[in-house]
Length: 236
Image (cartoon, rainbow, N blue to C red; front, top):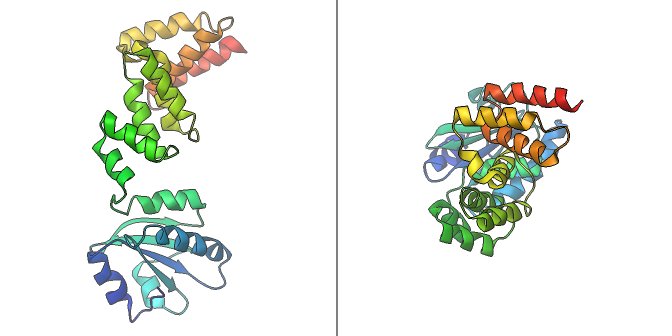
């Protein structure tokens, strides 16, 4: 809906007590606004009424723009219970907008409910219903990656091949390939990394295992940067 200064209280603030409301602040002269607008309309429409969209022309409705303290457009805000709960500025691509809106919409589909349940049987059912659902695939793969059974860890890798690569997917894949090695304590991991480092120049399997261990450690662990530099030095 198009919202004005006069209707903002009723159409946005009051309505946000019933369901999430996305407010798209735009202007006719704004090129990125013209790109983003149809994307937001499409994505919000896909929620089938679980999220509302309010479009505000900031030139015609300066009071709303002042309320949000807008400095640049397009600017998009999410309101719930009369409060801003999330926002972004600029024209995001459709997948990013869809991900952003999906966080606002309450779980309503059967797949959403199955993923929320999170047990093995529910997640298998979710991926049967929607084989390409990234959230369901990642959740099931993460569960299987920690299994002691090689077949289940291989199943996790097969599942991950269905969806685009992400940082989380790479970590899950690393855990699946490592198996029990992923559970090494701090001292054990360092000893294993040192051993692998000595072999990486001539042993592809050692190089992959070392990379997987660093993936499991994550970018925030100081050892990750240290051993990546050491790996580069050994290889080049």
